[in-house]
Amino acid sequence: MLLIESVDRPPAAAALFRQISSRAVPAWLDANVDRENLGRFSFLAADPFLKITAYGERIIEENCLNGEKIEHRSPFFPFLDRLQQRWQRPKESGFLPFESGLIGYLGYELGHQVETFTQTTENDLKMPDAFFAAYDALIAIDHLNNTTWLVASGLPEAPTSPAAADRARQRLEELRELVMAARKDKTETGSMAATHPKQSPQITSADGDLKANFSYASYRAAIEKILNYIAAGDIYQVNLSQRFATSFTGSYQEFYLHFRNLSPAPFGAYLETGAHCIMSNSPERYLLIKDDYIETRPIKGTRPRGATAFEDAELARQLLASPKDRAEHIMIVDLERNDLGRVAAYGSVHVPEMQILESYANVHHMVSTVAARIRPGKSSSECLLNSFPGGSITGAPKLRSMEIIDELEPTCRGVYTGSIGYFDFSGDLDFNIAIRTAVAYQDHLYFQVGGGIVADSDPDDEYQETRTKAASFLKALQKK
Image 1 (cartoon, rainbow, N blue to C red):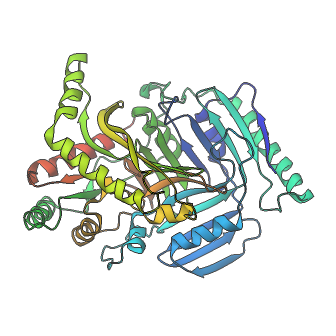
Image 2: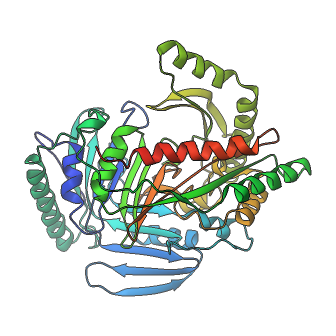
């Protein structure tokens, strides 16, 4: 069963977030731009009935209602398949893409369960390889129609039972109370890029001192090694990254609200997992599944926005005309076509959008859409398994690029370049590529940046690019 009701005078998404973030295991899938296409729906939830935490093939399932924990030994994607089968529910609303199910992340290191090679990087932040929480009640915001909905499914009770109806009514009432409290929030921090960054509350506190997991010499040496691999014909491209850290003792919630307003994105996310808080401002979709339709939207090719309208248009033109960017982009599109082909109905893989321009507050991106129809008998979890991690953040060929990333990067990526999103119990899902993503852990904020290394890459330029990206990230942490 599913109870749905619309909200009169809906509060701003930020006000709802402040209320929901005071509850257990809060999550916000935050569409903050492009309401007509990618960013139509946002979802807020808290107080899940189940938590799933994976460390390699050790998976802990925690019942949040009675505290019971069960440990499983299984690769994660087959476990996810069994979990979805256990809680299988058909869609009932007819208009919401997500009604009840899992919100969480797939960490980059799950790629070791897709492509079998030995992991050598250190998990110094103690991040799970995957974390999901199962939510039976949520707030859905339709930005296109400016409508907010309260949704309750009655899970984990049996769908047609009186207990399910009672739980759904109780959970709906809890959401009503949360909405009432949010209406009293007069702080001027809006949604969908409505607020200027200067209107955000003060952010505390980063000390401005960035510590990297590479030195200049070691990062340059890693790039030289990649160039040697390219010259030897091992690979065409590798996405190398380095991680930065700064002390941080402020409010995670207020930092995220400020972060999202500086550079609105269609696939933002805020997750609290316990020891870690994850804040993402991603523009990139990894995978969408709706019924038997599957889609990925790789980004490859970026330019900054210009200071004037003329300069801005020229930078966009240069990106779309660049032979280097176009060649790299086509390489990744071909990789993604191959990934979807593993699960697609014969002849259904196609590219409805090829090398189009998408412009955000600070950057222009070159983007394509690769889509297909899913072959009968292939589950959503199998689709994830056969395409994870996204090719735009590994390189090509994917396996060899991942081996080189593991060889050269000293620490685990964790959620960075993994994926954050929802997995509806109907089997539909939508996940981002977790770039522009920060992790708060033990009074520090960690963020990772990188770029694609190709045959004509200059090591000094590539290093400086990561420092420039890091400085931009640090700007979001400064006090206002």
